[in-house]
Length: 191
Image (cartoon, rainbow, N blue to C red; front, side, top):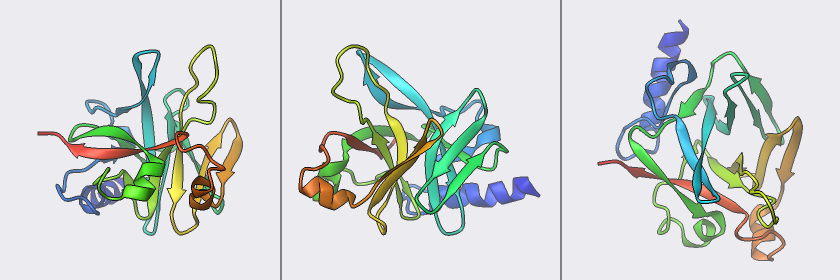
């Protein structure tokens, strides 16, 4: 029964808001043989790859980093916390798309010219947050989060604690949040 549900959602994930009708996510238990590690950062001239999970429901979607050691992902918004370890979520893959990083602030100002096809699902935009981007010494990682436009919030779960940034667009316009802190991923179809 679960496989049939996954097949339906798998089709929906490929078709919803996607001009190419090619899926950008696969059920987590079917990840072998797929390019499911997505480049999210350059750390000292080396690409850093992250496995990004998508928890899709009928009304919304949430993104989070997939922990390959525990086989879990922690999905968080101010309204919802879901820790999923049962494989009832998806992983993004780059079989059909190349993902490019794009500054979130520029996306807010120039949409959709700069990033014609941002990585999003049902009103939730995937966000890369690098809060410690200006630190000397070793590079700091980026964190996978969600920008929910209707709430104007960025949120994710990090080391057992929720991170919530409210009034995002207002704070960015007033330069209370650094413009280079957040990025989005843009989907570019592979030929």
